[in-house]
Length: 372
Ligand SMILES: C[S@@+](CC[C@H](N)C(=O)[O-])C[C@H]1O[C@@H](n2cnc3c(N)ncnc32)[C@H](O)[C@@H]1O
Image (cartoon, rainbow, N blue to C red; front, side):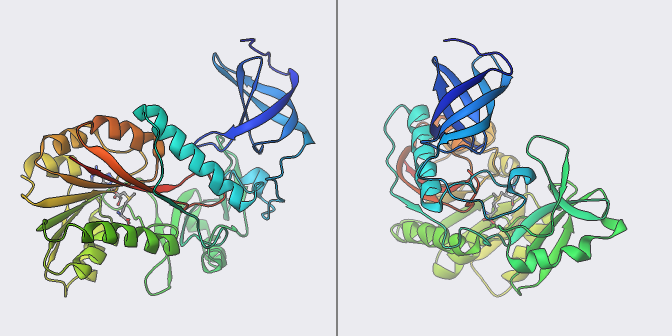
C-alpha cells in the first residue's frame, strides 16, 4: 500500500460510491481514494487534496473516460451548495448504487449476504421535498457548503416543492438573520416557518418525501395486517406527529395504538389530529424513560423510527429484555441500522425494504422486520 502525498496527481478508476458522502471510491496501489462529484466507471485524472492514515481525498482535474451513468446536473448551485451529492448521475444509476451500498453495509456488519425484499425509487427525482431547512445570512436564504461554514445564498432548490421556494422572499428579513429556519408544507397545503433552536421538546419533524412516505406506510400496514389476530397493542416509538400511528389506528380499529415522542410540539399536533379516534393515545416522553418505566403489554408489536443516530444502547437493551416478539424498524441510516441489528442479536432480520426518499443524495429510508 503506497501512501500518496498532498498535491500528487494520478489516474483513478472509480468503482463505487461511499455512504453517506456520495463520494466516488477508487484504489491506486491498494490505497483508497474518495473523489467528490465522481461516478462509478469514470476514469479520472485527479489531484490529492487530503491524506489520512488509511485513505486520501482527491479532486477531479479531468474526466478521461466518462462513466455512462453521468448526466448534466440540473441545478446551477450543485457544485457549490452542499445539499446534493448525486446530481451528476442518472437517476436509475443513483438507485442502483444505493441498493448496492445498503446491501453491502448490512452484509458486512451482519457477516451474511443480505438480499433486499424491495427497493422503491421515488416517483419524483426532483421537486419532492415538502420540508426544507435553510440558514438566513445577510438577509439571504441559503445553505452551508459541504463541511464548511461558507453560506451559499440560493433563490431556488430543485429538491423542494416550488411552493416552499416561492416562500423564500418572506424570509429575506432582518429578524431572521443568523437563524436556522425549518420550512414545511402542512396538511392544508400551507407553508409554515419554524425557528430551529435545536430544542428536542419543540422540534418539528415530518417525512420529506410525501409520495414515498405513503408507500412506506403501506408496507408497514401490510406487514402488520398478517398479525392482527395475535396483537392487541402497537407501540409507535419515535412517532413524531403520528405519521404511522394514525394510519395504523384507522386501519386496525380493534388494536390499541400508543405513540411516544420526545417533542411536545409534535405530540400536541398528533393529539389535535386524532380527537375522534378512540383507539389511539400519545405520550410526550424520552423513549429510554418510557421503556425503562413501562411494562410493555403482552401481545404487542413495536414500530421504531429513531433519528439518524439510531437506537440508544439502553433502548436496544430494553427491547431485548422485553417479551416482545415482533419489531418493525424504520431507519434513515444503514450504518446505525446495522449496528442496532447487531445489538438486537436475538431478533432475526426476516425482511428489509428500501425507499429512495432522498433522490440526488446518498440518503435513504428502510423498513426492516425482525422477530424471535
Ligand atoms: C425520524 S423522526 C420519525 C418521526 C415519525 N415516525 C414520522 O414518520 O414522522 C424521529 C423522531 O424521534 C424523536 N426523538 C428523537 N430523540 C428522541 C428520544 N430520545 N425519545 C423520544 N423521541 C425522540 C424526534 O422528535 C422525531 O420526531
